[in-house]
Length: 283
Figure 1: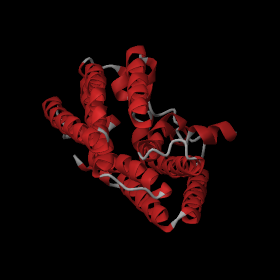
Figure 2: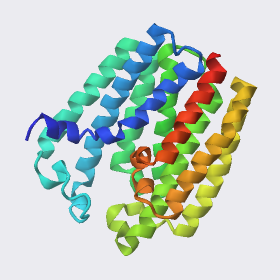
Figure 3: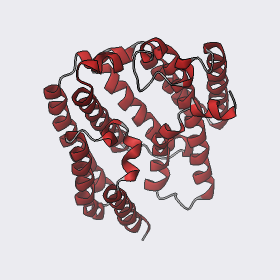
């Protein structure tokens, strides 16, 4: 048991979610403001610390169920390679460090991070077992990450900045559950308790709803920031259609969204969106 093992239980493959903290500095025209950019990076580190602490708690809470899941029973905490006691201590250290650093930043950011911790802990120990609450809590945490980016650099928080990440996360979460149902069949419940309540038909309907709302929210956001951003809408639609293809073909990418960066077409689409948005905002 070494340092690498402790880094592994922090789930670095999930840290990409915290990049949402940079949305505010990008869309508030402060990308070249060194102080605000450094504050955003500081917020990114804090979110990594707090979310990693929660992943550890999540593994502790799930360790008994994970023993029944072939894909999860080799996890370090589940297998006993890292003891529950050591995992709890490490999680407390990460929580403490994250909250202290956020308090040193500013009070509003600290309160937001405290709310993030409460929501995450509630999800890990109870709400992830509740149908609909599981996907809604994940989406709320996505929105908090985006809002945190605005709070830490003290800029205006657009309602669309909250809604777009929220519905994007909802789209990804529902799609993930649909693929899990299709791939795991009767074993789905062993993987995730709430899958006993979801059905493929239900998740399909929820995907349609979240996709429509996400497109509408993003469209209104482009009109709010700069009307020329409407040229990014076809790019965003392509990305959504491409990811929907992963979901409806039961691709492993839909079960593990971080793997989307292995798809060349999706990466090219992401780069194109960044390039057009940057050109519009910073021309």
